Image (cartoon, rainbow, N blue to C red; front, top):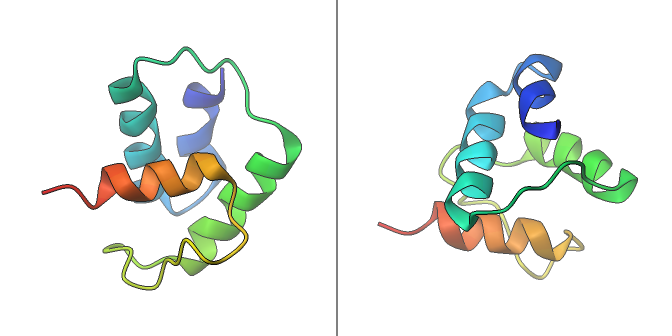
Length: 75
């Protein structure tokens, strides 16, 4: 599954571990993500700061990542 592969694919494990926690919190069983989401997730891992301060919903991220951003920014 996507959750099993992500932490090993990149050096940005903090992002992928948080993304996996987000998917778990949603209660989803997301067996895979589409190509656009995967490529965007890799790009996100290269560009976003750990506190998401440089993330913008106005950018062309998939909706799933806007939801992830909202979840990650909750206190």
